[in-house]
Image (cartoon, rainbow, N blue to C red; front, side, top):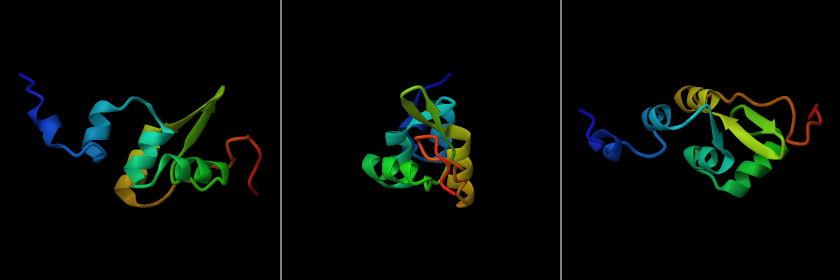
Length: 91
């Protein structure tokens, strides 16, 4: 029987909690919190192509790939995007 006690004891931005409760993509705000910085800083990093994990632009929305976020949190090795939010190459 699932009691929810384990979920209540797991920090909200731990890898285990993210894996158990987040979908395939996450908001920039939640992903930024998982890395320890503000939503505004997250969007600044996305615009400059420096967000530490893969980011998708879907229509007018920007989403963070949860699997990429988990890999970065566990390894400490960033997976930078090749393009900024506007779709223009950063190189």
